[in-house]
Image 1 (tube, rainbow over the protein chains, first blue to last red):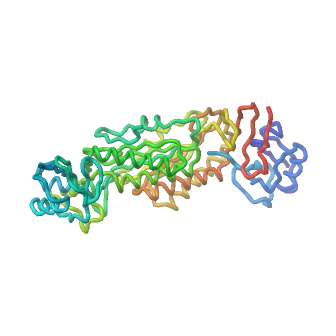
Image 2 (image 1 turned 180 degrees about the vertical axis):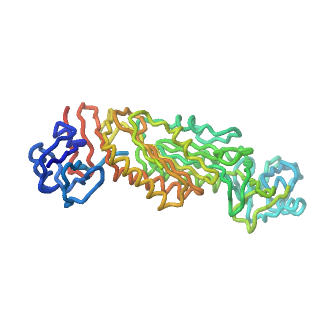
Image 3 (image 1 turned 120 degrees about the horizontal axis):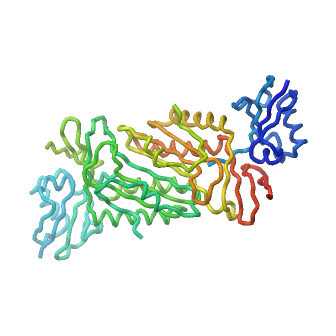
Length: 78
Length: 78
Length: 147
Length: 147
């Protein structure tokens, strides 16, 4: 039972990696809270969107085993 | 004492020429009225602008000898 | 500064765009008017544009100068075709560079609107039935020359 | 139909524009976002764009499909750079064709606004003083990495 987390932009720099595989968390919110504490992410969850398996989802979406999770900081393309 | 008149678009087709030189008219309005009668221009003066020597002018501008006059039908570039 | 031009040959929009460069430009907005195959419900086969070159040049330059004073932009250019055009050919091109996209879009649109309203250039449409008509917008009906 | 793309090589706007052809198109509006030498009063030396490719592709396609349903346009395309860019380089390009210019301009502007707001792409600015910062708009202050 595990999930893979992808990191981008300032989260990638703070985590020092592109991705990591972690034990299945209780929820997306719990997952981010733990990672934020561990990696020192500056951005609170309220400023992020979250995507699972390549699609945006609500923060309260249940996580399946093997899910690929990406926390999406405010974007700045263009 | 003469003026040159330039024709464009439907006026050029109706007049059958690009330009012509005419005796000095009493006014721009009188000049167009005479030409409209002679060439059968469909457009009334109210729908035209008028230019003298390459610049737009008011219809009541006096005409100097040798002036180059162009009656400007509604434009349709672009 | 010459920013407006008439040309009787195909528009080279790549060269036109290349002239609009500035390290301060974050936005480049452009518009190209092309000959389309229909107008007011009729099939259009081709177009011919005729200009009063001296007045078109001065009026085009005046419009671009006015755009530079009205909008927060860095530069702007426009060019208009004359002569015979086929379906798909570019008839007019407008390009604007600015630090930000808002003024670039606003100026580009203002310029094409002003060119269409003010510059002495006239379009003659050739229709599917072989007739032709000079376009004098606002006329009760267009002035049709059956040739 | 693939209308949106990410690319890590220079944008070929000529080829992009050439793909937007239709005999029914009277209007082609385009926007190019370029790397400019300043932002928020600071001198910018270069930019780096990072994307989440799978989600950027699907979100970009969704935006272009939505533009086609919202506006009276014939087609639209967009492409966004990733990787390292220098001052003056095009970072994003949007092109729209339509019968008339109003919808072409409106759709072009809507698309670039939506791309900037929704597509998971991030910009890291490199400044004249050697510092760098990921841009996360809306933050109380940008997340600065002094490298």
